[in-house]
Image 1: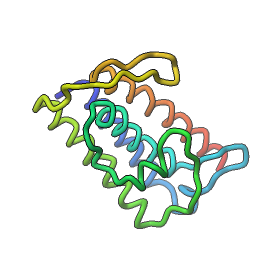
Image 2 (image 1 turned 90 degrees about the vertical axis):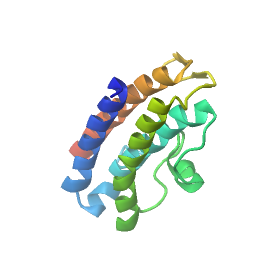
Image 3 (image 1 turned 90 degrees about the horizontal axis):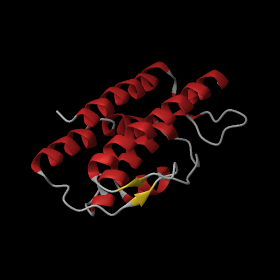
Image 4 (image 1 turned 135 degrees about the vertical axis):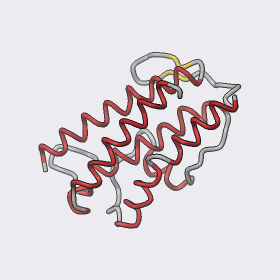
Amino acid sequence: MHYDIDITRKNRILLEGFLDRFTLEQLNKVPTGFKNNIIWNIAHCIVTQQLLVYKLSGLESVLSDEMISLYRKGTKTEHYVSQAEVDEIRNLLYTPINQTEEDYNKGVFKDFKGYTVSTGSILTNVDEALAFNNFHEGIHYGYILALIKAL
C-alpha cells in the first residue's frame, strides 16, 4: 500500500465523521466571517485530489465536470447541498482513492505537468502530488474544526 494513499484514506475517515456528526443544516451553514461550510470543504478535498493526481497526469477524473466546477480552487459555497448530494459526496470520499491506488499500482501515472501550489512548491510527479494532497486535506480538516467552533 502506498503510504500517502493510506494517509489520505485515514483523513477521509475523519472527514466522513463530520457527515455522521452534523445535521444537513449544520453541514450547509456558513458562519459569519467564513465563505464556506463543512460540506464544501469535504467536497473540495475530493475534487482537489482528482485535479492534483489525475488532471496533472493528463488523465480523466472520475468526477463530473459539474462537481469539479462547484468545488475547485477559487470557488465558494454557492448553493444548499441536498441530502442526496451529501450521500454522493460521502461515497466519493473513498471510491476515487481506491481507484487512485489501483491506477498507481498499474503504473498509469506516467506523465505529469508541473504545477506550482499555493505554498510556492512545485509538484513535478504523482508522488509529490499525493504527498501535497495530504497537506492540503490537513489544512481543510483544520478549517472544518474552526467552522465547527463557529456553528
